[in-house]
Image 1 (cartoon, rainbow, N blue to C red):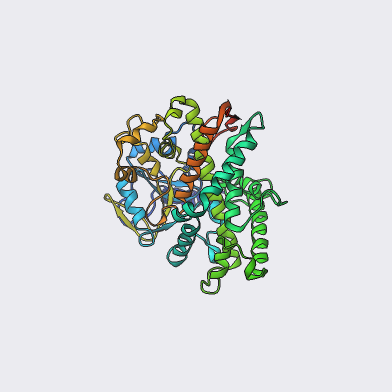
Image 2 (cartoon, one colour; image 1 turned 90 degrees about the vertical axis):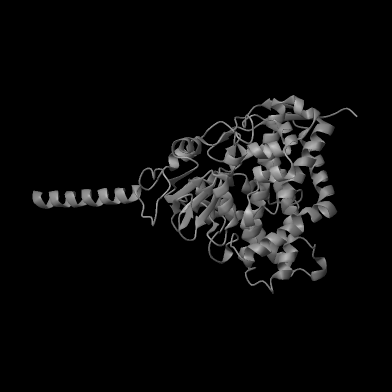
Length: 446
């Protein structure tokens, strides 16, 4: 009996030793970048989600760059990955999307935003081309000049006026609601003032899912996010059906109407795809703008002299780096700088390393809007990538910059404001503001 038990134990020990060895030394038709795969199953995920309280690179990335160099291997959330902070490698990766790499999301985001099957909204080729063209039509530079400029001015003025009646405002939360409601109006005619469905409430907690395990169990963060997502999608599907059943002459000519008009010729435009597309665009718009503007107010509050010459947008976008990097997946074995990235591995393009490069930006963690006076347009485009790059350059980048510019202009010319409570800027690894940055607003005397 004991012989059988000992033999079984020995077999298990050999099996798990072999398995752990394979985990630590993944198969590769070449030389893997240096690094560690961390613990079995969880990899190095725990170190990545430990909060840091700085605008610098997250310690998970910074420590490994110091140890291994600008490209290293790791494992996050059970996925083998290569992290690159090398500008040339990153540019090469982004320029080869659809050839050597494809866009990729964490499993939690992938399921939450329906990034698989027929409803996948991040696809390459004709679908991505259509979405980009559609977005530029309604949020690109021409639409901004011809239609959106006065509407953005109106929503900013109304928001600041409303906030000035409160003793203190959590600006990240308030901006999230304002931007989400405004974007929803542009996308599908949402009426925030008269609607019983407060769609912005469905989105405010979605960022919590970014680094969570995709366990759909009651009580988990992921389960709560899925419930909010389902509720938001229900609103979007009902709106779509109402619009499709309405007379043609009552159409608004907005984003949703254009999709409906294109449904006959673009077969991928199903009701499910359309609802998920609008959900994804809403999330992307409100989170990026609200986070960047909140950081602007925090930084300007810490540097009052900036108000004398308000040139903060590029500097805020440089320091903001809302996400730690852009995620791609290798479609085939890739050769970079003598290393091999195996097919199927995740690639994290750390564009924030470009923004914090001391060789380009003296004292990179210092908020110094005047540094951009020394950069021509080519240098700016080469060293500032807050909206991604390559084929996936954000189609809403001009909308984001316009909203920020109008908000800051209205704020500094029409209002006085004081920071009541300083929230701690942190990353886990997504940019956050702790308990919030609370500000009081008051109109300037005319």
